[in-house]
Length: 354
Image (cartoon, rainbow, N blue to C red; front, side, top):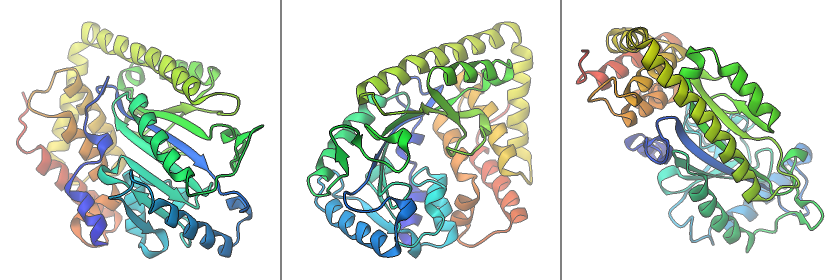
C-alpha cells in the first residue's frame, strides 16, 4: 500500500535515539484500554457488533484535533506483509493482524500515536516517545483520551473504573512500559536476578514485540502488570522508580566491563561489527544480536562516526516485512537473509574498523 511505503522514508518517533537515558532506554510507551458501553467485549463480539464499533469509533476519531493529520488503515484491506510491517514498527500487536476483518489502526503524525480498533479491547490507544519519557507520553495520551471520550461512549463505572476485557487492565486501563537495552546485564549474567526482582515488585518483562516474545537483541519491554486500584500517576511513579534501579544496574555492569574486561568487550563489539559489515547472508535473530553489540559499542563511545539512530533503524529495517517493502516484492527466507545482509552492509559502508 502506497501510504505505508511512505513510512519507509522516515524513522518512527521512538527510533530517534534521543530523550532521557536513551543509551539504555530506547522508548517509553503508555497504552490505554477502552471499550464502548452496551457492546460485547471482543471475546463475545459478533461481526456485526465489531462493524458497528468500528463505525462509531471512526466517527469519533474524526472529531479529534490531535488526530487531525492521522491515517486510518483497515486491517482487512492490507496484505500479510503490510500487516506484519505495522507489527515491526510497533504500531499494532501481533494479535491485531489475526482475523483482520472489522479491525483497524489509526496512526498519528510521526507514528507517536497509534490506536488499534477491535483488538482485545474496542480501543487500544498508544503513545510512544523516545528515551525514558513517560511524562510526555502521558500528557499526550491524556489529552487524546479526553478528546475521544467526548464523542465515544466509554464503558465506565464509578466502582471499577474503565471496564476491560482482561480483568488486570480494569481500573485506569493503563499499561506503562519502557523498551530497555540491557546487554551488559546479559553479558555479566545478572539479567535473570534483575528480572526476578522486578517481577516481585509488580512488573513484567517481555521481548521486543511484547507478550509471548523472547528478548531478542537484549531488549526487554518492562511494564506494570495490574492497573486496578492504582492511579495513572502511581503506575508511572512505580515503573519510573523501578526502571531507574534497572538503569543503575546496567550502568554499573557497563562500568565493570569497561574497567575489568575492556579488551574482551571491544573484541565482542568489533567482531560483531566485522560480521555485519562483511556477511553475505544473515538471519533476523543473528542481526539483532550483532546489532545489540554494536549499539553497546556506540553508547560506550567505543565506535566513532556511527550514530545510535542508524543502529536503531537497522533493528527495524532488517526485519522481514521491512525488507520486503524495501524490495517491493515478496521474498522467501533465503532471499530475506541475503537482502538483510546487503542492507546492513550498505548502511555501514562508510564506517571503518579501527
